[in-house]
Image (cartoon, rainbow, N blue to C red; front, side):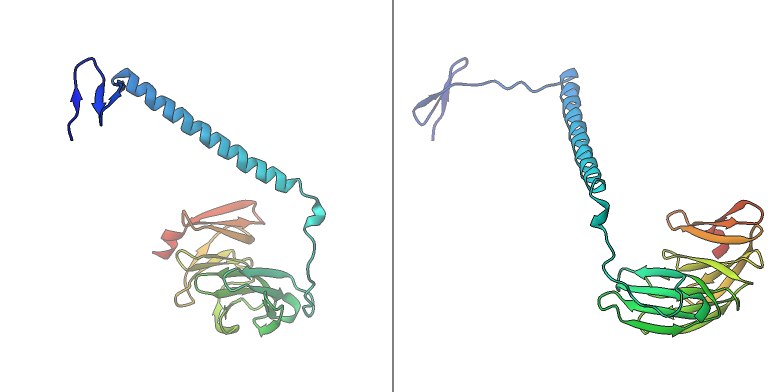
Length: 237
């Protein structure tokens, strides 16, 4: 196959005359300008995507309130006062303070399994990774460890006076029980379900929250109007 070309003229390909075209490749400042145009277009696409997402959110917010209704009423004995959900196993756990019982509800069938725990279960926290539920029993100063597979208590941990709140860091498998009556936090090692250390905080600690990303936990002290910020890595060491 032979191609013939002469400077300034078209090319002959398979006997047809083909007109030459010249393409300018931007260099120097022009190359930067081309990049900027592409960057600007990318920014425009992001703006369009953001507007689209906001439109969907606003549309959802504009739905009538009656779109969300009660689909079922599950009859639990006595008066439930706390609840947590394991979305992995589709299990709902209901705490009943006056009856010292936790009710494990199958989310698919609404069948209920009653589990006896310590005295006056105040609140609970779930570790989805280990499928364990930790229940703070206010009156007897213990934490009941409930195994989500068998729905049975596998361990009872003694902590401080009147554990009022509890939180879990699933990344470090650490549980923090706030003891309202002794102004302390019991740090529990989830691998052994034993207290690894006790941290003194402000007066009347009533609630705790964990930032699993920074490994910090925060305790709201009701009596003295403070919040204790604690490094979880230091309490583990």
